[in-house]
Amino acid sequence: QVHLVESGGGVVQPGRSLGLSCSASGFSFNDYAMHWVRQAPGKGLEWVAGLGVNRDHQTYADSVKGRFAISRDDSRGILYLQMNSLTADDTALYYCVRVHCGGDCHWADAFEIWGRGTMVTVS
Amino acid sequence: QSALTQPPSASGSLGQSVTISCSGTSSDVGSYNYVSWYQQESGKDPKLIIYEVNKRPSGVPERFSGSKSGNTASLTVSGLQAEDEADYYCGSYGGRFNFVFGTGTKVSVL
Image (tube, rainbow over all chains, first blue to last red; front, side, top):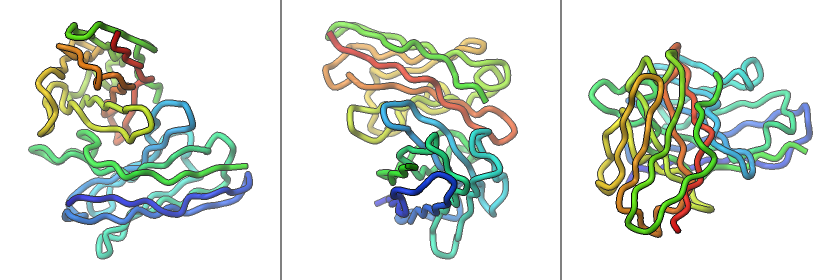
């Protein structure tokens, strides 16, 4: 069974850093682009960052560019998100997501597999 | 990277149809067929229900359908059922390896 399990969330003071992890199982991790999506309490979905296969096409939403870094360890099947200079606006449930792989396995065809999320509170 | 525009709410009676619009630009929805839709029931995680404009993942009922015209995509839920009451989000590849979600629509079943 395909699973994504996030960890690393918690309460952090403004200006500090926090690292999230996402452990993948049940599929060939290195064959898929992976992303982070967040949802602030009572708000909508916001794409945060994406990383393609072979660690290419590493991109970020404008709201986190320069502060967040996405990375992956294909040998261990883990996706990471390093978050620096956190502000109250970064308070959200952070989801690790795997893309849907259609005919061409596009970097962002659609987000097919979602973890349960890990909550980050900046306060 | 502006969010795609969706109506805040939509509603329909049991058995009727409801259509949700998702308005983007020529840089995202209008340029790519990588438009997707997500259903998020209250307190639950998002679920992919439409990908590549009009394709349904395995297990998603046929009453969910998607389409696109120009810069606007649409999701239609036919034969509304009580369990369809949820928040719905569109999403689109935005070019240059970016992705954008819609603002979200709360669907109520009357």
